[in-house]
Length: 310
Length: 235
Image 1 (cartoon, each protein chain N blue to C red):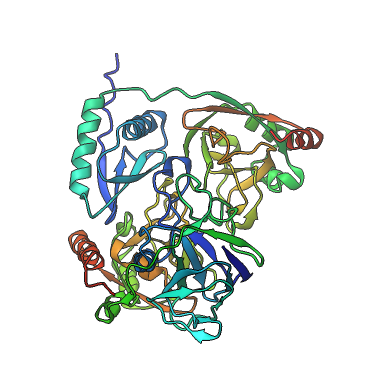
Image 2 (cartoon, rainbow over the protein chains, first blue to last red):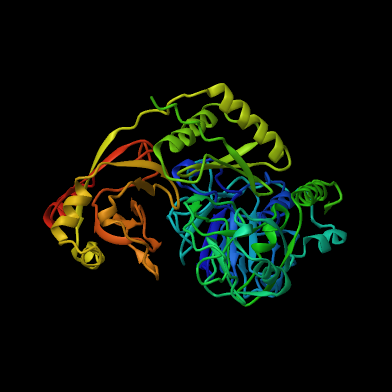
């Protein structure tokens, strides 16, 4: 059992999401940085998609009521255990009564606190993920509050001790996101398409798990036609009438009516999960073929035996 | 005698590196939508290998797949085969559902401005909206949000130029020739004309969504007393 002494800014229970309920209007949700969640779980010998805590910008304070193992992956939130610094991407033993304190991020937007055996909450549509907007899943469909108690699964000795430092570079979140053409790329004049690829955008404070709102020089659409509502892909870069793009993210709307100028590739979606308000972001166009090669390559190093060290 | 209309050819487009959009034309019409629903039903009954999710809409279906296990080309081939095999099947029939709706007041802040915009009396607007039978085209946007059509031209109106930051659950809005019911409190730009006390989406209920594709929906005007009574009854 874990007791929440301070909940942090926006802390939720997440796993790899609930795919398959698009026909009900339910989007997948799930960890914003699924790579960090998967590695955190693998360090502990959990299944890759075991539920964990996703912490956003400012972590919380957690008291452990049983002996267990934990890992912290994703961004560095300056964590201490009873005052002693804890390294990220490493499995650590925690004793009953010890207090894990997380602070403000030193790097990206999100940190994952994985626990041996995973966090146990009732599954909703097959997943533990919190969908905050529709109050679905996780702990009562909402972010953590002070005083919450989180049940954890049975504890086992960890599978590994730490990430291979040679792999750290591959895990650094990208600020230059690779994208493929969007469904309505041809609605935008060449100059607007160049505007997307030649200047940087800033992530605004109005960004969340549903979408990242960007600001930069407005992107002009040539078509004033109303788009018929259509399914929306994860990572779609929508351009609403004001010309300021929005990256559709994990708690996405399943359908929408804004033109899509480009779409973030699967291999770079975890990097989107680490973007903070005020971060600068750039885009680079790649072909579908390159996008496919990149996700296959990413999955290959993620699955490699050299990823973790004993 | 008129020759039968040529069926619209399915078009395929990569939406992202892990999704393929299948489109049947680009207009809101029963015939094209029936093809979306038939394909959706077929893919739900017998999923294509390595597909992960389906996002139906008016005249398109977005298919999400696992890019590690399949490709756009393989999904397109499988969908083409399925369409051929299916032939001209009609999608499953829907149910008839009556939705009690309390028009105007704080529940429908855009009712009076919309009547003024369309040069109608409020009574005429309510009569037109409630005497029309709507079809549920699909559920999308957020869990249980039903896209209903078609609103008669006389009461159709574009979205608000500036969306509200919060629209309460149960609110009924108009956007173009669509009308819809917000199942949970979310930001939204549809013109709000009233609110229903019914709960549109509950995970612990079977079925979870009050409305499903193909259902025929009518709105029954109710007063605030009945709204409160139904809400209390926990329907």
